[in-house]
Image (cartoon, rainbow, N blue to C red; front, side, top):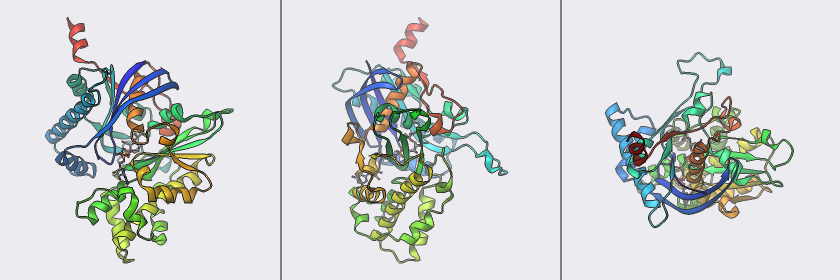
Length: 396
Ligand SMILES: Nc1ncnc2c1ncn2[C@@H]1O[C@H](COP(=O)(O)OP(=O)(O)OP(=O)(O)O)[C@@H](O)[C@H]1O
Ligand SMILES: CC(=O)N[C@H]1[C@@H]2OC[C@@H](O2)[C@@H](O)[C@@H]1O[C@H](C)C(=O)O
């Protein structure tokens, strides 16, 4: 058994999700016990700065260094706090904070482009600083090795989903709804099921809704709690159909995206469209919720090898009851549950995943799923940073 801390702050930038888990077994045959889980909100100023940078504010190298340090310190503090009152972990897996994500260029498009054909994804909050401040071996920077072999570096969680949710009888879609939404399709474990496992980013999760709530409340609120505001409006289906023409929804997987595509700029475009239909604030939120639900289901109907027998929701969007209800109605008769209902925390599954990815790196097991990321092959993910004491011991 290895006790591991998993840390992530996702694209919503709402705070650092931290877990303390005990992991038993090897590779895909693992068992996980959640010892503790908590979300530590970022200080308001730090969150605002990260959000600005995520949507393209220019930043000097000195400012980037300062931001990286502030995030690393916040992550180290989260790692220390989650362990208070518990036996200490021997390993930390830290995703860090994504501030930029550029998928690899699609060569088949034969576009003339100045972009590198290799993708680029930047997660900050240096693992070396976390290892030093916590005095615990820390694995970080998980996406770069997958990108180096032609992958998107995302989504990485599907391989962990395969280990956690595989079932001999039932096929499942694990649908994460964070800032961005992504899925993992896990067929029933029969025949050559491994060939059919896949995953990709479906498009916006809560990102547009969150930006809209912030805009409509002049910053007083950051999300539509339980989806109550959106549920009180009426979606404009004409706009949903229009927005669904976005080229991302017509790209075949593997594919990944971020707030570069579905961020504040895209929301401005949605609000501009909405102004032509005189939508009330509640109608705008209803329409954005509908767009999110319909875009997820559109991905299922167009790109899954087969519809799943059940859908398991996780991420903060699984708490938006209106979004959940619309997904259930659009997918009927397929049951839509949350991962909580099958014993895996919907709030902490991503943090658990980065604990598992660190554990796999330590034991020499691959972390990526090439059918999800588009990488040419499986690779070890993550860079290892040793704790202080071991460094002193080896240098003595
Ligand atoms: N009770 C709730 N009702 C409605 N929405 C909620 C609720 N709780 C959380 N959310 C939504 O979930 C978001 C946070 O979700 P989560 O922490 O899964 O995102 P993330 O991990 O940052 O994103 P990603 O998976 O894209 O990296 C919030 O910004 C909010 O929009
Ligand atoms: C570049 C990046 O941070 N991508 C995130 C984001 O948030 C959801 C979706 O987009 C997913 O691709 C990924 O996160 C999860 C943890 C993943 O890699 O599976």
